[in-house]
Length: 186
Length: 295
Image (cartoon, rainbow over all chains, first blue to last red; front, side, top):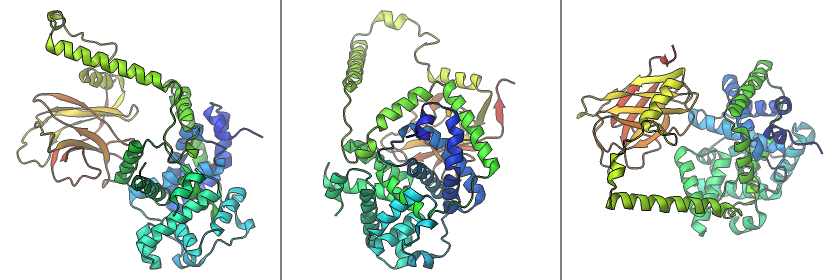
C-alpha cells in the first residue's frame, strides 16, 4: 500500500505537494466551483483550501476516512466560511429538480467512485425526507429556514431530518463512535 | 456530561457540518466543548463531505495558472514554516493531539502519561509567583525597589519594547494615527496603530482614551481589511484603559488580517461582542500608506 500523499506532505516531502495538486486539484476545484459559482471566488478559495491542506496534512487519519473525503471536508469548510462571510448564497440550478431527484444516479455517473458510491449507499438507507433535507442542506447549501420555506416542512422537522439523516450516514460510513451514537440518535 | 449539554453540542456540530456556524455559534461550541472537556470532532463534517461527493462531477481540472500559483504559494508556505522552525513542532503537536480524535466524540480527552509534568511545573510556577507577590507586597524589599529595571529583558519584552521592535524589524508595516470617533465627550485622542501582515502582530499606542468601568463596558478593536466584508470586520480583541496617559495595547486579531484599511475602537459590553452595532465609536485610524521603516 502506498503512503498517503498527506502523510508525505506532513513529513516534509516537497515532491508530494505537486502530487497532491495533481491528484486532488480537480476535486477541490469542482467543490469550489459548484458551491461558489463565481470563478474568481472559486480561484481564491482553492488557493486558501490548499494552504489549509498543507496545514492540516498531519491530522489526516486513514483509519477514519479516505484522503479524498478528508480533503473534501477541508474544502467544504473553507468554502462555507467564505459563503458565510460574504453573505453570498449558493443558488441551486433548479430547486424543483433538487426536491424531486432521489439518490439514484448510476455508478458510472459518479466521478469520485469509491467514496461517492459508499456515501450514496449510505444515503439510500435514509427516509426520502431525510435525503431531501440533506441534499438541500449539504449539496445546495440552503439553511434550515430556507429548506423549511422551500419545502413547507416546519423548521423543527427540517432540523430533525438533518440530524437523524446525518447521524445515520455517519454511522453507516463508520465515522465517529457508534456506541455513543445510539445514546443520542433518538 | 448532562443530556442538555450533549444535545447542544450535537445540534451545533450538525449545523456546522451542514451549513456552517457564525462567530457567535462557533464561540458557543468552543465554550461548551471546553466546559465538557470534549476534543475536536470531525465525524459530522466528514459525513457531510462524503455526501457532497455523491453528486459531484469533476468535469474540469485546475486551470493551469491556478495550479502554478498554488505550487508557488506552497513553496512560500513551507519555506516560511521552515524559517520559523515550525513545521516539525506544529505538525508533531497536531498529529499527537489528533491521533484518535475522530473516534472520541463526546469522550473526555484522555490524559497522556506525561501530562502531569506540565501541570506540576505550571503549579510550581504559580505557587512561586503567589509567594513572590505576597512577599513583595507584605514586606517590600528595599533592595528590590532600589534596583533599576533593566532596559532590556532577555526573557520578556515590555509592550513598549515589543512595539518598537515590531516597527523597526518589519520593512512593510501598516501604520495609522488615531482620530476621535463619535463619542460626544471625547474631543481629542492621540497615538497610532501598527500592524504587520507578515507577523500577524500589531499594537495600539493610545493617548486620551477615557478610563472605562470594566463592570459596565469594554473597548473592542475592529480591523477592516481587504479580505473581509466591511459588514464583518475582524475582531481585534477587547481591552480596558486603567490609567491616564500613554498606553500600549497588543492587538489580538481573531482572524488573519491582510491589507488593513481601517481600525476602529468601539465601546461594547464587558467581554466584547461578535458583531458591533457601532453605536459608540471611540476612535478611528485610517490607513493611508504602508510605512517603509527601512527606507
